Image (cartoon, rainbow, N blue to C red; front, side):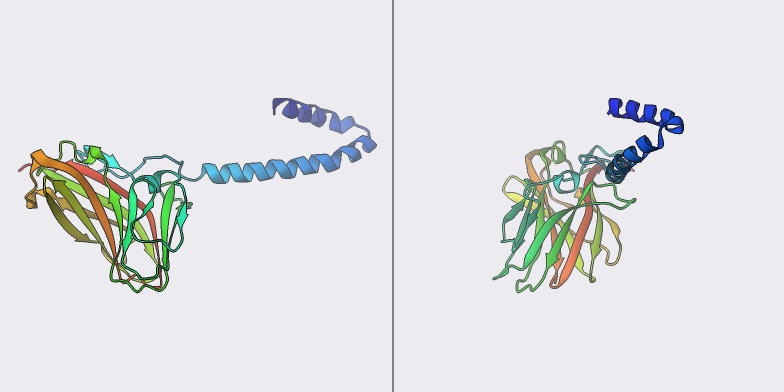
Length: 244
């Protein structure tokens, strides 16, 4: 690259006094080189303008002691899509699709976020065609760090950026396994809002702090038939509740 740049610099210096026949011979390859340089610059500038894969930039509340963006929205997963997804199909290592359709007409695909406002490098697009089932959910397993030191004083928050073709009811259900029991808190995502946040205050549960084993969140889509759902970003944070 440096040698090519040095050669071009020398040609530029000599161009004013060069023989016209030599300049005529140089013009076609130089024009081809310029096209290739412009193509590479266009691709590089476009990609560098995107959120970087693996980036963890996210909005965090004050006194946050844990924050996490699942892998679907953080980096490429393999395979990047599922067609006619069956129930209990895994998508990456942290998410699973559940439904009760007799015949699945459901597809999932990881997409690259390209908007200036996007913090997450990737998004998830769910296309639903005919839907003869009664429920559709995406289960996200929270990592072990989410439950380390988890107590009744904590508030868990989920932030999401959601787009839908048609209005759709979406619910988030936090599940916390402690011993033989599971605590559940359900929150509805506000209809029509692109960027939404819901909070789960553990003070209102009967969770046994000493026996917490694992946690997961169900994203439940009500009546998703003939709709496209794009989850541009999903993040989770944890903070201690303010003490009065």
